[in-house]
Image (tube, rainbow, N blue to C red):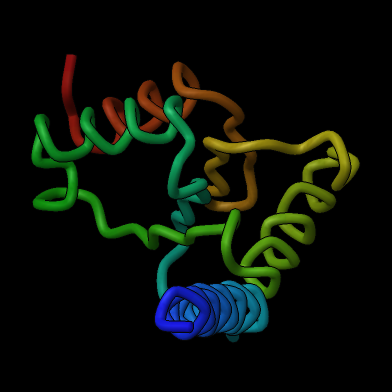
Length: 127
């Protein structure tokens, strides 16, 4: 009898944890878009290894000290993903063909690690 009660309690805990996690994911996906306040928008995915390379470059070179830009996460925020799709479309890139890292700066698109880093090097005056 005790074994059944313990198993029921463990099952309830697992179910409650799963429901909490599912609700957290749902809330993140339904979040509002990040306000865009600059002309330079860096779109990234939280777990994206290429994005993490660019982020490391930004930190290592203290880019934020000289260049004002927005960082916008799109993998866990559908509203931000919609903004990314709009920016890509402005450059003639089909939304289902766009990925991250993606940089939209002064009406121009930069796709991938190299293009993003090269833009930031130039903007920060790094040779």
